[in-house]
Amino acid sequence: MRTLRHLAGHMEEYVAGTFMALLLLALSAQVASRYLLGSSIGWTEEVARYLFIWLVFLGASAAIRRRIHVAVDLFGLRTARDAARIGLALAVHLCSIFFFLNMAWWGALGVARMWDVPSATLQISTGLLYLIFPLAGGLMTLRTLVLMRGIIRG
Image 1 (spheres, helix red, strand yellow):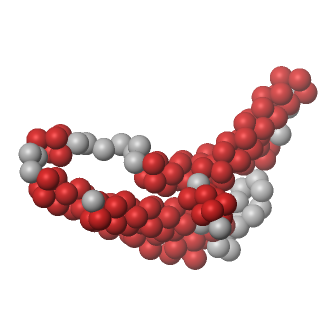
Image 2: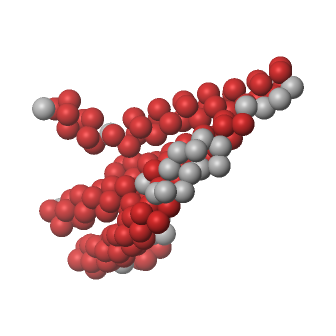
């Protein structure tokens, strides 16, 4: 049970790490083929682009879980009372959740719209490639809710 909880807690990091390795392989193959063979492999650029997009959004979710995402804490530092600081933190998290849910909603609509459109080189569904937007929106919402629960519990 502890192993499953650990895997679920670090899922984004493991998948992002795998995507980083695949991104490195795709870009290395592109560079090697260009310099050694004199011609580039066409699909590596598209694979690298989509792996990078997925990597960024999975990394953002992992950053929220670890509480290392970019934040402006000027107001939090100047707020002397604990209740005001907690209220401000909860308000910021609620705004974040609003953004993440919007990203998930509009991302799901985009996936549905682009599902039958093939990608330029790979000829796979563009909707499948855009699936990261609703997926990351949902993951970031869940991670933010967990942070809020921790703030409320103290």
